[in-house]
Length: 229
Image 1 (cartoon, helix red, strand yellow):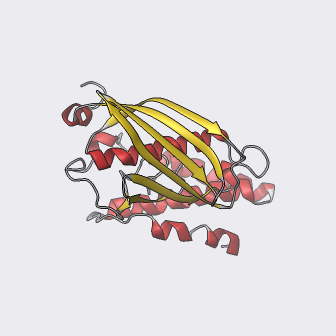
Image 2 (cartoon, rainbow, N blue to C red):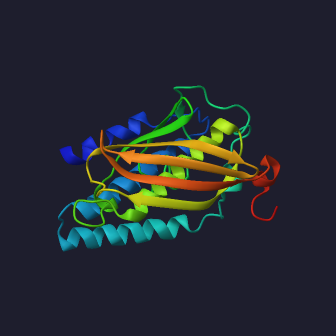
Image 3 (cartoon, rainbow, N blue to C red):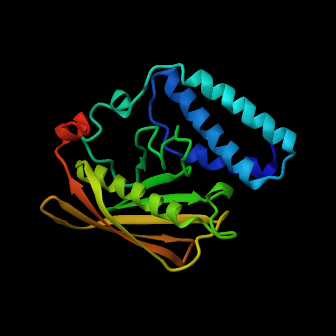
């Protein structure tokens, strides 16, 4: 593997490593990382047509094998007591492994390192080739998804599940690829069932994007039952 690719494996070592007693969870986390690395290698590296065709055939074969398994859903993999106690200040934060942006096993993950800093959730990350929109800049939808996911960690501080009701993004500068970034968010106000949040994405002293969000709270017992509750 290239030196460039190895440099992007390091952030994974800083992602929260909860106590997973079963081998499957760890295997899925490794597979998720491998799929993410493959995606960035496909986008960010030149390769022969033969190699690209070989990758496609191999992935099609593996996909066919995987689709022979029974359907697996979030309700089957949730953790008991996930809303019981808020994480302490300074704690590294994690969520369920398949969470699309921050999950260890997610093929779509951004390899975030998330921690609690007082009343704020802070995510550190470096965007990679497959996140590119305009040349050398992130696609705007990646930034929006990042904010939506990191806002969700604030819910753990409150011990309160909620759904995104509204998300607003103001892009103040191009978000660069291959540069360390910090996404910092917090609860601004709680009115009835509505949680109003704010946040910023920066590459140091420069704010690249700002976000506001409204989340709608839902009882824990109803959240646990899913959409049919």
